[in-house]
Amino acid sequence: MANDTLTITDNRTGKTYEIPVENDTIRAMDLRQIRVNEDDFGLMSYDPAFGNTASCKSKVTFIDGGKGILRYRGYPIEQLADNSSFLEVAYLLLYGELPTKEQYKEWQNGVVHHTIIHENIKKFIDGFRYDAHPMGMLLGTVGALSTFYPEAKEIFDEQSRELQIHRLIAKMPTIAAFCYRHRVGLPYVYPDNDLTYVGNFLNMMFRMTELKYKPNPVIEKAIDILFMLHADHEQNCSTNAMRNVGSSHADPYSSTAAAIGALYGPLHGGANEAVLIMLNQIGSKDKIPAFIKSVKAGETRLMGFGHRVYKAYDPRARIIKNKAHEVFEETGRNPLLDIALELEKIALEDDYFIKRRLYPNVDFYSGLIYQSMGLHPSMFTVMFAIPRTAGWLAQWKEMLSDDELKIARPRQVYLGAGERDYVPLDDR
Ligand code: ACO
Image (cartoon, rainbow, N blue to C red; front, side, top):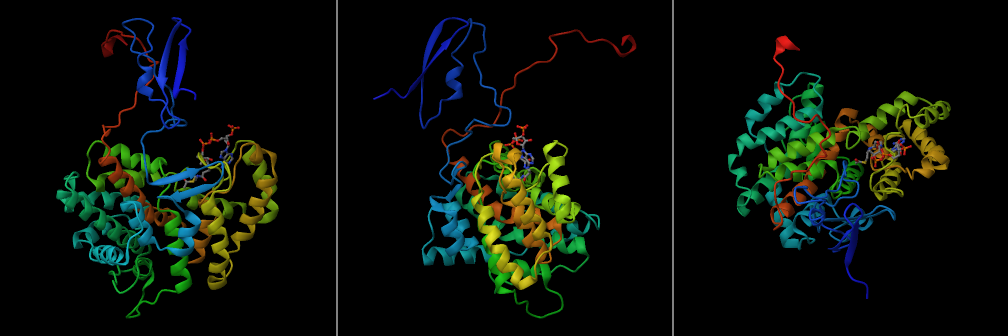
């Protein structure tokens, strides 16, 4: 049987090193022993966007990007989307197993208990400009929660950690809905804990003068599925931000605010909003060839296409695409769907996209569903942040119990000036 090692010959010195291989991975630190001379710092690996670097060991989510497989704690995403609910999936991600009936009841009650936010939070949401982007408001408000719950900094106290986890899962929909109501100039709606997690969110978003809000069951179910699909995605940009900031032992509100900031970017969660903007700009099917031409010329990107990990159809996009038809039966067909379908068809037949293995990702169709439910595009990324909070917290929790936990501190390849003497301003 072959040795689980890698033999490296340094051609600069002629020396040979044997490095252990574990889980198809070498430890970058094992390269440090490779030196030209005693003063040499040692060999490093250079990987600017973590293209081939594992930053942690994790048991939360598995992705096989080549085969289009996504599993939470071993369960295929398709089975969860068909049979589970967001709150159950959040429990699964956070605690590693599907809950028993008893555990689920306790979890659900625990979350419901924390849906209300401090009245002062309303006041500072009021302070945002009338046209503030909900993601900016969400980021600021979640970060500010650490000032309401100072005990959250006790991150190694299990009881405190659990309390903050319950609070964050419970308050995200409330804060998100309040940010939305502020943006559209409507009064805030308080949580109705008789409703489901998603039903209550819809209540806080859309209730007008009715005494009791009754969510549309088709829309409620569709959002629940979308929330499950968005709940975790292993070491993506925002999860890496969560782990990175959390590695300094920051409280979970500050770390989650950092993750929200990462998600906001148009190359990550912000892509669902960008897809809608793009489809509107294209405007009609006859404009698609010209648009594809500009994408191929590198002038713009086909938003909602491509993924760092998936080099096959994103399994979440497939589920969402199928779900879209059910939602449109309820809400009326979104006219942008025809442009999206045609765009997908043309792109999937085009050599540029085939060669680069670019397929629709989770963001390609989700915005169309959200828009037909009456959501403004600025809320789309917020709809991503609410469920992803479960994944961020599961990854954060896992990181804190990792016996290899250290503050994240990458190295750099320094290419700047050598030492030089300061020149006074008058002499420059
Ligand atoms: N449209 C056109 N070309 C693309 C696209 C796209 N959407 N995505 C990648 N490419 C091209 C690149 O130009 C590059 O071509 P080249 O080799 O000729 O230079 C090649 O495909 C590889 O692209 P990279 O940017 O190196 O791929 P990377 O893994 O770094 O990026 C990313 C992944 C950011 C998702 C990228 O595909 C992208 O920008 N997509 C559009 C934004 C988007 O939909 N983001 C959501 C991702 S899912 C999520 O975060 C929830």
